[in-house]
Length: 288
Picture 1 (cartoon, one colour):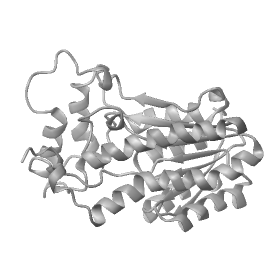
Picture 2 (cartoon, one colour):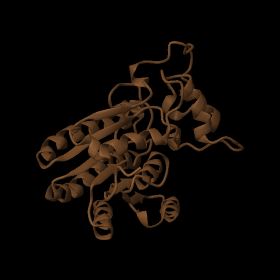
Picture 3 (cartoon, helix red, strand yellow):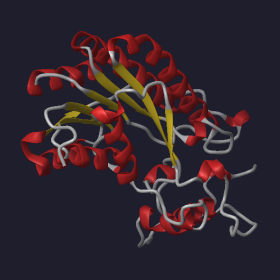
Picture 4 (cartoon, one colour):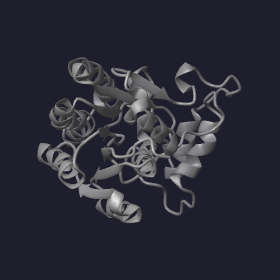
């Protein structure tokens, strides 16, 4: 339980979901962690729970000043930066391609999930190059590796993160700085609501509603959890991965390989689970 002893990490989107699971795992493994997120209440509560090993800073990863501030906080408070996990994300703009909202919704999607990782790498790279070591991790998605894994713009952005990862890995490799992406599949988080709200009177959490759907869909018969992503992030942040760079590592219970052979024909279980939560077919799944 000390694979990250003495290391300092910044985790964006660290206040909830996969990010919070990773924050907890990193601290348990000996790291000092800066939690960067827009969710001020959740982020502050998590930092208070973890004590001196964690610090929260309210951060919009699409804003360069905010990204610089979170990196500076890690260096000034904990003395360095060994790992940056560009994890912040959300469902983003959805809908048929001809109906794509190219206004604020599009801008927020690109800023949060592509500009954010670019800015993170920009400000982490000089520190890691100077020390001759470091690990940069970004959350991509199986949606960036194949069609049909998410809404159009989300899929395009995640493919962009994978391309960015491979490109920057080549530049930073000579400095022994690794750059990798994690591609989650069906991880039980509210991201599958894509901004829609649970229907009035819903008495089950999003996570609990989604678990049975994933259990019956992917080859490994259980839903993915935030702790699964935390485990991969731990490997990539630790010295166990010093010869791993430029990779898009899939954590999906085998979903990208194919659906379970026992899956019955009909509507996607994920679509049905989300429909049960919000009371209608989700906008991102409507054919017309």
